[in-house]
Image 1 (cartoon, rainbow, N blue to C red):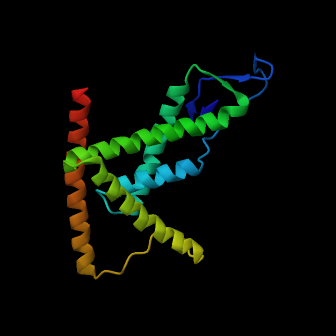
Image 2 (cartoon, rainbow, N blue to C red):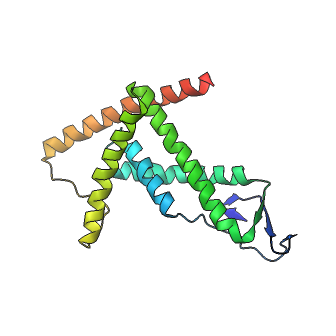
Image 3 (spheres, rainbow, N blue to C red):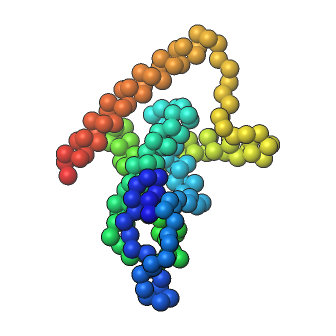
Length: 188
C-alpha cells in the first residue's frame, strides 16, 4: 500500500476474526480530510499569512508541505497493526495531529520572533482566520467562487511598492523564522 507514492508499512487486520488480512488491498490509498482538517488548514494558512499576506503563497506552501506530512503519517504508523475498518479514521487522525503539531510550531516561532505571549499570537491568528475565511463564507453564500480572494485594484505604482514591501518582509521573516527554528532545534 502507498499514499501519494509513499509506502505505508502497516499490517491490516480484521478485528472481528483477529486475523491478518490476506485479501487484495488497494495499492493506492488516500488520506481523507474531515472538518477538523479544514479548521487546522485555516489556522495553518492564518499562521503563514502573518508573515506573508498572500493567500496563494500560503496555499502553495501548504500543498508543498502536505507531501512531507504524508511522509510523517507513514513513518508514524510504520510497523503498527491497524483494523481495516478504522484505517481511514486512523490516517485522518494521524494527519490532523501532524498538522496540529506544525501549527503549534508556527505559533511558538511567532512567539519567539515577536517576543510576545501565546495569547497575542492566537489573537492575531484568529483575526486572520476571521478576515480571510469569513470573506470566503460570505462569497459562498452569494454563489461566488471563493478562490482567489478578490483584492482591491491598486494602481501600477502601488502594486510595485506593495510587491517590493511584501518581498522584503517575506525575506526578512524567512531569515528570522529559520534562525529561530535552528536555535530551537539546537537548544533541544
